[in-house]
Image 1: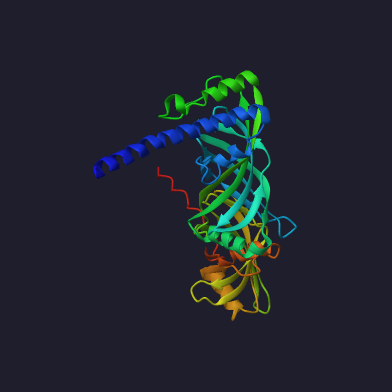
Image 2: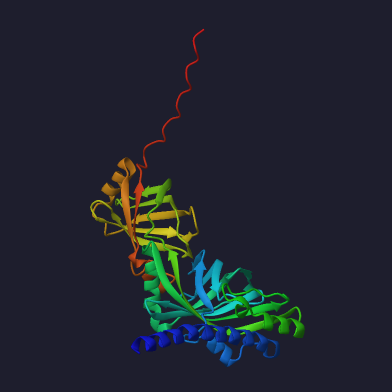
Length: 372
């Protein structure tokens, strides 16, 4: 009897799952029919895509790049953009999505720290992937979460990879023109939104409709700056030593960026130390530090200050033998943007400087002509 009961219970659950799935597909199909008259999803249709509603509209979000800009004259304005955004969406959408926009909340370590809204941009469907972009968009950092946003920037700066969450709502525009909609894999006729597509095509052929307020939530993982491990000294631009021993060394360096991040910071400054002894030297300003992917040639101006114990000796070592400088962020690393300053205060990088007084090696003499 117990075995029969278990068998009956098991069969009940096996049969119930397809019925729920079939009903869910039917509900989605009905929602697309509803678009023809209301031009948007009603509350019941939106509820299908909410947590617990049974349908996950967005399965994944991948960003090819994520770019930040901290150079606005208003120090509290941060903007971001992405030229490559790929969104995995629910299977079986019967019509092509042509445009999209989002209202997004940035979540880091379980805390909502900022939000931004993107304008309408073109989108292209490739199977179940929506390919689009994020134009330059102002980020609203919540007033009481500025420290957390700085910590988010710190994490991107020092980690080789970092994961955070984007959640919010997306609006999409669809064009009704295809008479034969796709089918959900393995679902046969039940997986097709054919009825919805046929009815809508008859009611409004080649019509653009908008679905607004579809909920999404997805983890996003990006490769970070990893504390800038690949910095190359390129050339000396200028060097000056004063009668009191203080000095200025102006150089060109190359910061190689292999991450998925880009950032415009303007002028930033770092406390500068002798890497071997940890003795303080002064301050180095990286002028117009704008990092794109690949090589970034930056002017670095290192100035000794009163903290240097013997600046003349340091200058002699650098110019005659070469030296390794260590740059460390601090609370005033960015004089323009306090959020950025705190974010890059954790940066700790080294630059190997060759001997600056040694002349360039003479070119090799051409081989002697063979004797007659």
